[in-house]
Image 1: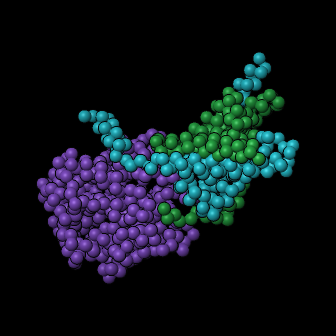
Image 2: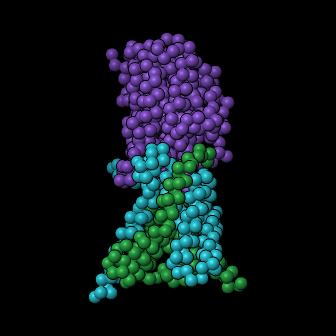
Image 3: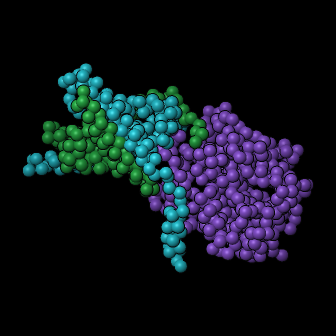
Amino acid sequence: MTNTERNEKYLAYVEKKSPKASWVKSLLHAFLVGGAICVFGQMIGDILKNIFPLMDINMVSAWSSASVIFITVITTGFGVFDKLARFAGAGTVIPITGFANSIASCAIEFKQEGLIFGLGAKMFYVAGPVIVNGVTYSMIVGLIYLLISIL
Amino acid sequence: MGEALLMYLKVFIVGGLICMIGQIIIVRTKFTTARILVLFLMIGAVLGGFNIYGYLVEFAGAGATIPITGFGNALARGAILGGLTDGFFGALAGGLLSVSLGISVSIGLSYCVALLSHSKTKKE
Amino acid sequence: MSKKIGSQTYKLNNNVVIIGNAATVGSKEGAGPLKKYFKYIESDDLMGETSFEKAERKMMELTIERALKSCGLTEKKLDLLIGGDLLNQLVTINYSARDLSVPFLGIYGACSTMSESLAIGSMLLDGGYGDYIACVTGSHFSTAERQYRNPLEFGNQRQTYSQWTVTGMGCSILSNQGNGPHITKVTMGKVTDWGVKDIANMGAAMAPAAMSTLTAFFKDTKTRPEDYDLIISGDLGKLGSDILKDLMQKEKYPLGQNYVDCGHMIYSNEQKAFQGGSGAGCSASVFNSYIITKIKEGVFKKVLFMATGALMNTTLNQQGESIPAIAHLVMVER
């Protein structure tokens, strides 16, 4: 048996032997917390629409996302967000809370290395790929649509 | 009243479902959090590029905009609409502009919070 | 005349004794199943310092001091300090050694460092190179998370096959005179890599290395697992030790009830450490408390202590590389 074959067999064996998370419960947790966070965002949006009936719809959703981000960063600072995240899994990763928590937790963690090289440089350690990929793709899509509309 | 309740139900279910799909991926694959974030972002962005995600937003409001897929969609729509209104500038900058509030708040608030707090010891 | 027996094992002819030892652990470990064996339990993971790295260093310095005290030695009598830690460039031990005026050798074996340092230290004493050697290593949960995984406040769910890095230190003082458990044989491990890429599944990455070293020992010494009172691995964890048992079964050296794992022992199920403890501090703290105590009490007379290390680098792992591992073994007798 070559090393590659041995490794393949071993990895298949490990996969079978590794315990899997209690599936169904974690799906439920993710569903409930994720849904609740979205409901909260919807509530903020509705309150804003009540106070500012002429606000642009994109502005409303930007502000409701910003509110969720605000709460995420504060709770991360108090050391409580990660407790909810342990319970909720994707329920806190998928909403904008995951993005915000990754930025806040990196900022808090790397502050020790100073404000410039630590906090400043490593704030986007996890969230960086999100912005890089998102912005690059948006530019491509924007240009494509622009060119199509010109032609 | 009943209409509002129905809307909130849709928000809850759609938001919850998107998260549940994310949870399935977390449990069944070795994807790290960063990878999942990018995956869902790009799904939202691509669906936004083809003008499909907007229907979900109409249907489920925050249930579609709060998940990171909504962030991706906002990026794509921002660039497309930016291109139509402001030409080249709008096409290139429109995406980032549309999510700029969220990013600014994330950065500025994290900076302030980081100055005031430090990582806590974990017990489990 | 060569002291080598077989392919990887060395028989020590002269008296190599563990004359002193100390282990310091954090509050989670101090609340676990082995708490009555841990003489020094620190309730504050920050140890009153401003960073977890400084806390880890303080814990190591205190442990060396405590080990020296346990055999009435001062650092001046030490011929050599040998050891390592998990952090980049071995900062914990380098900075700890800075304050001791002892000749120092820093080694990196990841979580296998305890047995690696014991192996090298005892071979040096056996060869007549000095009279007193201190072997030390350890780890800290918060510094390891920071370096190898995620920021502490990061909201992720732990995988059920993952382990918890132990906050703990262990130091053994070796000598060629005096009383205490003897180190009689040493097996140097080979780097083994069976393709595991998941940094959350260290147990699976390290089990083949443990199998490789253990089988080499049995073949070299022409003995079998039943011949020993205790065979203890460093931090394979529950999953890793189950895998090792399967692998050893296939090699025709099945492990029985006399096989345990430090990682599996250090936490209880209620402490939510999933597969158990890991980190250099896991084997170091358990060895320098529970194991040595039991050997002195006469409960275990012939022990095989084998710490296992995953030689992981996050950059290379992100580049798609798998995780190589190594295991070193020392035989300790009453």
